[in-house]
Length: 313
Image 1 (tube, rainbow, N blue to C red):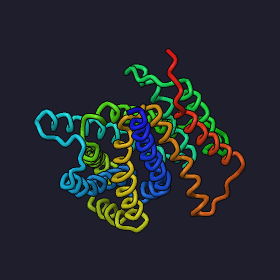
Image 2 (cartoon, rainbow, N blue to C red):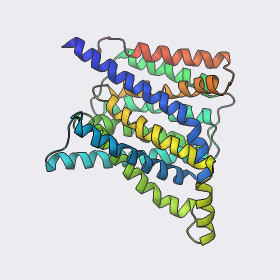
Image 3 (cartoon, helix red, strand yellow):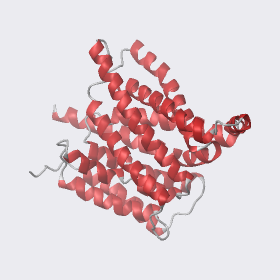
Image 4 (cartoon, rainbow, N blue to C red):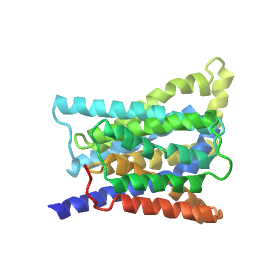
């Protein structure tokens, strides 16, 4: 029984690492798409694409009898809708704060570092919900934070307005992780993911209409629609909608089943490492010594945090 639990934890950890890989490679698309189409437009359209992508997946899973916790009774549906709405509300706030951080000029490196600070917030918030973790996890968090600083921050570190938005984004992403943890074992993860994207897309449409489209003039609507159909906008939106949303966030929900939320946040913080490695391998960007040391610290922290050490009371 114990070996089976270990295999399940390894499988769920692998899903979270795969999620971090997808998010890390989609980071550039997120920044470029928000600049081209507008921050709220980017989040609205990519979220709706993510929801549409999951509809055939749900149908196929049901036909092949692969669905876990398929809703049957009214109580099941109420729980599923509540889970999807809660996750969608948190995702709406967090993702739009992140996009606004980009919009107000935060660099990609600083954005990656500040957003990943959710791994510091999750264990603190988790204490209020009796989510304990071992001392090795706390050591891993400290080491990973140092590694993220070396990896992402390349100049003077000054807190600006865009950085405050990203810190708030990290706080809400921490809440998002804990909400998923609360519902992951009770509902179908793919359905919950689909509902959260639908909620995020609908809610993001409101600021999109008033801010990005600037509803007052027909010319503004024409200019917005023309910009949306430019390759610089729809290619990143499509990429982020299918991979980052449809695949990545769904894998996060599935991977968090049976994994401590603090460990999950640490695994997801690998997205910054994969983002830098993708730039090195695909774009030919040079890796300096401090960035290599930062990657090594984060990888070591993730491995150390998952060692089977006992929690000291």
